[in-house]
Image 1 (tube, rainbow, N blue to C red):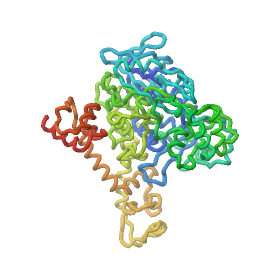
Image 2 (image 1 turned 180 degrees about the horizontal axis):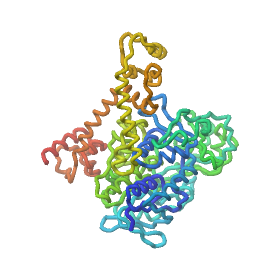
Image 3 (image 1 turned 180 degrees about the vertical axis):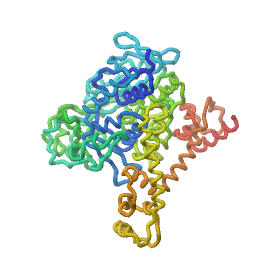
Image 4 (image 1 turned 90 degrees about the vertical axis):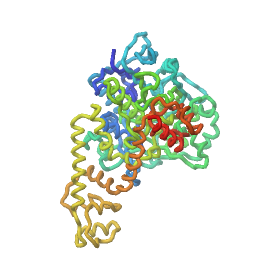
Length: 617
């Protein structure tokens, strides 16, 4: 018997298995093919808006994705640098083969973790508690707890045109009986759909007809462990390219819509709203003259380019015509055609905030099986499922991240509170406290938590605490440095559109002004501050008022999170709205705060519930 079985070697499974093993639980990772661990069956990239901050959070908690992404990146690019810090995030163009190899090596050389190649036939239960799995050869592996991270492999079908083929991603077999073993325990499942674009031979693209998309010159990274020498220097980074759909592209799609699996009636599952197929874009945004298409390298060891934004389930002959209508791809040769995939997922409303099933003890679920999309969302869930599974086996309190503490907290809270009817994608707009959830401060938000559960090593927490001490010390020193009207700093101010000083002013006060930076003030001060510390100070100072307001609002809501809802009979609570009562009964929130975020539960319902709780203490 093992302590923890992790079923599935994708991005969720890897983080879950590593977390449990590093927390000293005897862990076994079950995967169909070891050489496919942490594969990238869709886009060869990590990060992006909101998602990049999730990767940063995974690293701050002691996870692995950030390190792997940094060390195997072909290009690193900080997005939204012309906007505020609340929406800036990192995206790397990954070498998909190198990334996979990196993660495989880590999994195969981690203490307390065994990796086994096999096919799981079903999950075994006894008295609403998971006991292990039965493999395709009839053998049984027993466990104390199981983390299910099967991704898009449960009863999956590949869809192209009018053809449906029973298969998982990248021609791997589907797991046909897992869904039924869950349904036999009363777990609700539903069908979802996603897809992936074609890959074309790179040497068949005329890049002169496209726009070059370079990376970021400054050193940027996901992991706080990563050093400048660990990533490709800017001069050696690979370019991505931008092209656009044309009127001919749109005409080909319109003329052949009924040949698409999406529009022929073949697809039963719901597709992703925020990453639609190209035919879906053409139909939904008929007034748009063109759509962006990014051309992205897949690996230094592959001769293929990924056609980002061109997902489709059209027949192969129509795909070829569509691709050749794009500027630069007129003579392209296709190595792998696009396809849609339909699969079973579980209704995430059945999950606790720990990602354990409400009705099945010691069964945790993470990743796309919970109705999400994206490698980053999967990895974040996998990490939290692994942490909470290990904590439960150790008899310790769970780790629940609040919405003001992490995008991972927003993600999980949305899933278990609101559920989803389509593949859920994390967006900055989903986070009401996004100014608190920034790329630059993930360590400040989560390092102590990662260290407390035993994932973040001593050297990392020491480095974090040293940095925080420096931020405090230099903030105080900047408040003590004063410039007089006679100071030459007036020249710097005038260069940036400000009047010369008329009164004395501290360096800290000057930093509140737009475009005034510590680097710009450094010639006038006797201080040496690292770029990382300087950036953190500048953001905290420039956005001080907004940050304080967000923290105040978050503190108010945190007080509601402390009010537990245990064994409440909502039929006995008078004056609840009909919809509010129905939603509370269906979702059974764990706290008053969670109840307040349920769609259909209005503020009056929360006030009524608060009064009821006071009367029944």
